[in-house]
Image 1 (tube, helix red, strand yellow):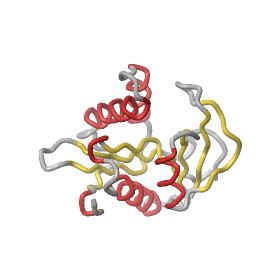
Image 2 (spheres, rainbow, N blue to C red):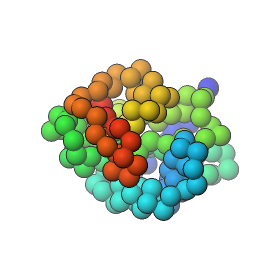
Image 3 (cartoon, rainbow, N blue to C red):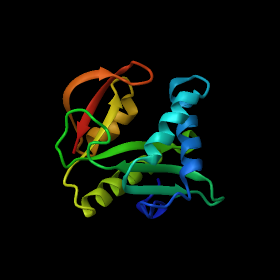
Length: 164
């Protein structure tokens, strides 16, 4: 089981891990969906990394490779129905080989804590309605659905906004 000690808070302005995190995001989405990596997924992740940051937490492995990360961006950057002060948990990914050991939870908890420390009482995220493991994690951390499902910008799959 991973602990929060495995998570490192990066300076919001730091770009040190961006490329590795974008690579991890593209690989994790491909693994989740059982498809080859999609250049559009990579491009959208790069756009999210270019947005204003509230918090950024990473989990580097012993070899220095990024095993997971969570990126929280400024209120309004995620769109949708949410409290006006809600920071947006834009991306959360764990290397598929490291999933199931608590690292995702450690990243989520640290990201929400950092957003609150930055003055944001609420955090929001968008989750695919068919991503059961992610939904279990988010619900267990106190996130609750708001609004109606909407089509994901890239895949068209039903997606919902969650707020904590």
